[in-house]
Image (tube, rainbow, N blue to C red; front, side, top):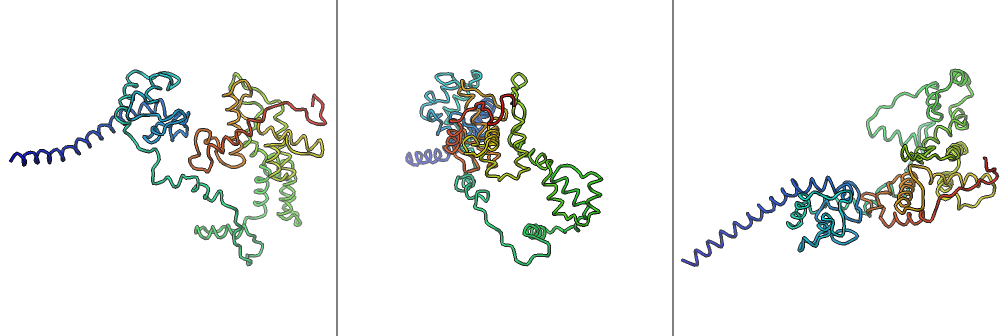
Length: 387
C-alpha cells in the first residue's frame, strides 16, 4: 500500500513539473516582452541590433545567440554568473559604461540584471533560421547581379528595321500580355529626343525646320543633339548627384565650409559626357587620377581635377582626430560603393553585410587604401596661381 502511494505521488509530480516549467517559461517571456524589450529598444537597439544594422564593439543585444556570442570584449552574458556578465557591468558603469550618453535608471538596471539572472529569456535568434541560407555569402554571390554577363539569344530573323533591343522588348511585352501602341509620329519622336538628350524642348523654329527637312532622319537628329553642349549638362547632372556635388560641405550652418574649386569637377564631368570619355577611364580618374601617367598638361589637369570626387560631400577634413578621419574614409568608401558598384559598402564597417557578399574584411581592405591617402592643394600644370 505504501509503495502504491509513493508511486501515485511520483506520478502526480511527473505531471505537475512540466506544467510548472511551462508556467515559468511563459512568465519569463512576458517579463522580457513587457519590461526588458522596451528598455533595449529605447537605449540599446540604435547601436546594437540587426534592425539598425549596427554592432558597435561587435555587440548585438536583440537575441540570446548574439548576447552569448558577445563582441570585441567577449561574451556579453555569463549564464552561470550574472554579476560577472559584461552587460551587467556595463549598465552599472563598472569598467564599461553603457549607454554612454546617460546611465540607466536604477529600476531599469534592476530589470536587466533580473533578466540576466533568469537566463536572458527572449528570441534565440534575431533572424529567421529558415531564411539564413538566403543571407549567406555564397547565396549572395550567386545572385544574378554578380553573375557574368551572358549575351541573350537573338534570332537572325527579326522584323525589318528592328534590332536586338526591339526584339527583347517585344518578347517582354508579349509575355506580359500588353498590347503595343502604334508608332509615334515624327513630331512626337523629335520632342522626346530633345527631352531625353537635352532636357529641353525644341524651339518652334527648330521643330519646324526638322519637320520640313525630309533629309533629317531620326538618327541624324539624335547625332546632332549628342554633339550639343547641353547633352553633357543634362546627363552630367546625374553623375554629379551620385558624386554628392556641391559648392560647400553642407555639414552645418556654423561650419558650412566652401569648396572654392568644386566647379572644376563639375566642368570635368560635363566635358567627359560631351567628349564620350570611356567609362573605365572616367572611373579610374576619379578614384586614382593623381597616380596615373599622362602625356600633356591638359590630361594631367583632368586627372587631378577628377580626384575631387573623393573630396566632395558632407565631411570635415582634418588629421588631428582619429574619429574624424575614420568618418571621412567611411564616407568615401560608402560613396565609391554606391557610385561604382550600386552597393552599400558602409554596412560592413560594423559587421559583414546582411545581404550582399561584402565582409568586414573587405571593408577594411578598402579602408587601408583610403587611409594611405590625404587631401592636398596641388597647383594645376600650366595654370597660374590665380587660375
